[in-house]
Image (cartoon, rainbow, N blue to C red; front, side, top):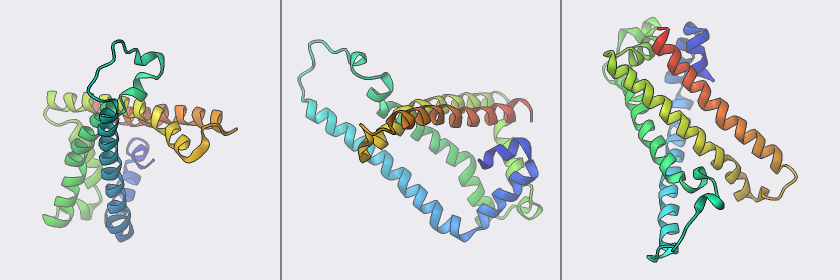
Length: 198
């Protein structure tokens, strides 16, 4: 994970980030594919939610105990997904937009010096005192929701591909559980580090 370098090797983080920002394969192929994939995922999520509501019809249940049949996470994927979408927009505003602006539109001398990415990362989490703390809280909350989203989404993705009753199901569920905890936790640690240490 490249972001880990910002904690253990700042110069390495600058070098890898600069390489990615100048690499045509990443910038003009992988980045658009990733962006299209994210947009498609969110659009399909909202469409499926609308279809599910339509299928249930206008008549409300006399008594509904969703927790008896499914976890809060599985019943509220649209909520966790919406929180993640809002966070992604903030994250793009914090990092992607400034990088595009200062690298391609109004060139920043720090790019040539190789210090831009680390300096910008520190700037985001030390910006205007209280505002930076609010941003830190938003990041932490967003990654908690990401963890919840992944806990259900990871195993559901494999079930959709036919692995629901596979002999590998317990391993997939276990891997998905640890993945959904460790990855968001890693991002939280990085954000907290840059807020308190830098």
